Image (cartoon, rainbow, N blue to C red):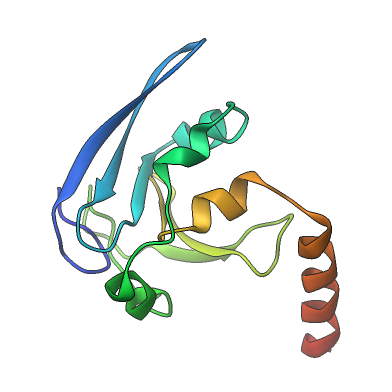
Length: 128
């Protein structure tokens, strides 16, 4: 599979959990992660699942602002969304196939901190 952001090669990574294994696809170039439907939600609650994510590279940081991407499964345009609990966190979804996180975003998706509440409060004030 090809990375929807940098068009690098996506490599399969399997994480073993107490409830079974989950295989995700991670870009070897920009370190973005593709989750098939439901995989991110399963891993969000699993201990140490954030170790699949990293802060990425200079290349990955160049792709953060790129939001008009196509689904690597079906080729249709993906929808950029803001996380309902963390408005500052944006990622791309394909309703039929899954979601894509830039490097570091899955860790942010997994952990909601006091700083996230403060950041979202400031974000809401600036929008109005």
